[in-house]
Image (cartoon, rainbow, N blue to C red; front, side, top):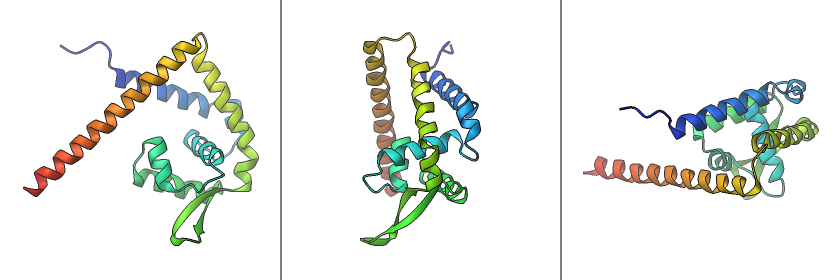
Length: 160
């Protein structure tokens, strides 16, 4: 018998609602060509401006595949939101750097992030927010362990 509710479905729905809300916010309407996903990436690169950020960092941070990150980064480069720059240690490696245009819209993006956080946590206690983070991180770890286990099982099956 099917379940009435699925955690994955609820998380997906919440993610869609957040994305739609950000994409339709007044601040977002003023930021041409920067989708909701672009704003998260701009925010991440800005937060880590004291270190080199590479595409693999975005893969890990946002839990997305290499090909998806590559497509998003290519689009962001073509929109003039980020640049790829060589690093002295290895010219093959390209760090991701915000353009002046992205730095200009960063205040709007940060205000948008804070407003979304306020909306999401309205009516929740600090303890409830802490419990949420604990639960969601444990679920993320469960998925990562399961993916790793599946990857190991698949590689063993292919070698026999």
